[in-house]
Amino acid sequence: DSDLTGCGVYLMIIGLVLMVFGIIAIFWRDPIVQLIYSCLAAFVFAIYLVFDTQLVLGKGQYSYSLDDSILAAIQLYMDIINLFLNILRILA
Image (cartoon, rainbow, N blue to C red; front, top):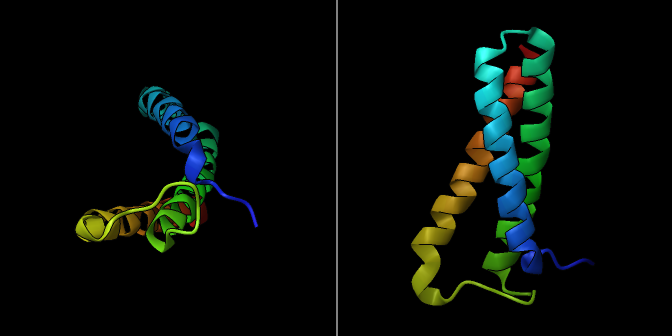
């Protein structure tokens, strides 16, 4: 049982690196680069899903308060949608 709630800064940096790679992948029209980007993005959003789920459950170092329930629901929704879209790009 590992606690990912303390890794928020690292996940943000990984997300920023993924965003820069995504911008580069827009202009680099190679299908292999697009596949690599989709695989990395699916992996990162799967980790984000675990991270946000642990924040919602409140069993880690950090957690959401009761007032943050709308923000937590939106973040979980965005994680699931982004993971689903990247899996579709991998399979397409």
